[in-house]
Image (cartoon, rainbow, N blue to C red):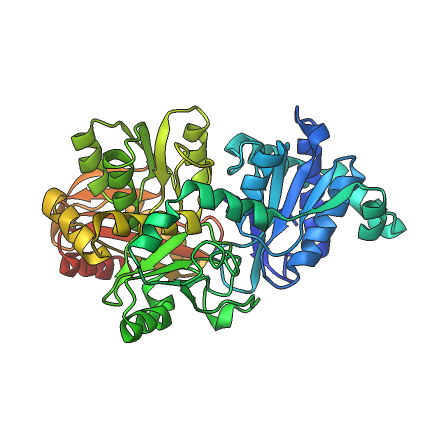
Length: 472
């Protein structure tokens, strides 16, 4: 089979296509790429989250890399994606690999590839690795190795010191303690609750905020039968906990803890779009940072208004953090983000999404302003106008997907009674509508579904737009 890479690497269903043989193929394709890297002699790091067979897939990956002559550091335990990326920078390595399917359901696993800068591999690198993975030479070499059972064991490579365990979690926690004003949060006596969703965020917050309450603080490869993605329907338990126990803020991270979500003091899910806006406002007005703002096509238009006020240039990219990373590596980027809660702040941290770091910054913002999340957003809306947003993921068939995309390609004169003013095809189809609204649809790069996005000044209008989308 041909292995197809998405926006941030390869993901597939465990035992269906995500098998040890295919992980072997991808690992060797990746090894061939890193062997040519200027820092190849420094080695690479392999991290993994708490998904089914995560450690075993990581060990196989490490063995394949070591067999190709690369020094390999493997995470001592389950770690988040940002912890793996930070380890690359701190150890000055050629790059890294994270065995994770991020926010995807439990039956998936994946293979994220990271550059030496501690962020998502760029499109050219991904394309090169995909080509090497699917080459006839790679298939032939792996078949020979597997038939001859010639790949040395993990223990053998450890004895030869070609594979070495690394406490990437400790490195990460130590760095966050430097980056966030924890004393300010503690002095404010902010009551914080955190839900790592049984994922890689488990065990990270306790050393930083010992008084925080933590839900689902054990690794569970089934994620408690929920999708490990911060969404309104997956955070109901956290919302109930917040209101019943009168917490000030609830933080939630996805399966590999690179995305952030939040629940406010009223138990209402707090849009990641507004998290991005609050972070931008705080970085500019309080931390006095400046630079480019780079966001994906599906991010709220409030960011455009904020950039106009602050005199900052805004750049829109296709969905996929690797496109944002591309700009970050050119320098001068203040913040970059996606609507799904993936936010990177290279002005003070690595060019990588980091859910827990962003969540702690959100706590710092509340502590600094002595206001709740609800109050902070009310102030944002008073200044820049209300921007209500929602997204609908439509599980579908290839035939239906083609039909919907064909209709979008033909275009619409109006959507949900709103006139279409402009259409963009930067990623999928985005229709700018009258009265400050917009609708966007695109096919997922990793799953058999279509994503529908909508924003408008009123939630009732957002629901009408999404109702229109569901009937396409």
